[in-house]
Amino acid sequence: MSSGSTRPRVRAVGSARGASQFAGVLLHGRGKTPEEKIDLAARFGNIEGIRWVVPEAETPGSWYPGRFWDPRGANEPYLSEAVERCHEAVLEASEDSRLGPEHLVIVGFSQGACLALEYALRHPGHVGSLIVFTGALMGVPGSDWKAGAPKSLAGLRVLLTGSDVDDWVPEYNSHEAARLFRDLGADVQLRIYPGRPHIVSEEEISAARDFLNRIQIE
Image (cartoon, rainbow, N blue to C red; front, side, top):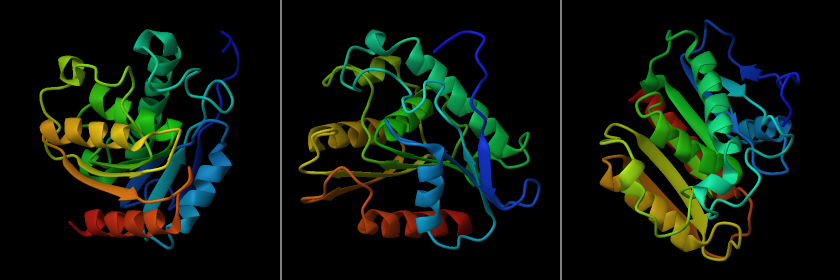
């Protein structure tokens, strides 16, 4: 990160600005690129009327330098800057509030999924849905997550996936995130896929496609 550097551009694909009925923000993982998130969105299939906004980390390939389970301070100020970068993308996706939170979703994988959860905790009510492909809460496992959490995440719909053999995000951390968000009133679907490596599987894509189609018609 360097002050005065040119900010990475935000890409957009799908329906045209002003014509979309629904919009999403795609958050790439560590070592990944916005183009790979665009490819992932294409795997969802033809979802009519959706516009995807795809930000890029200030530091190429990384939203924050450490692991999610490090003490929170170890990933600052990068984490807070990443959350604000995500917020800028959410505002762009909303098209200056033309689309309300119920028409906005954030989709993230791995580091991007951790960022999606962190964004929802810091900016409650700005999006109506999250798709969290293998994500976890930021900070030392077992922390008092509620201490800094909003009073309620009622109305937020979350699809959270994980694996029982993923070394990057252990299954325990997936359950920990699901428990906190449920305790805060969110509607959480947690799906653990036995034997799945650190990828977004076709089963997860199918679950996400169903999730997106369902929230579009509600």
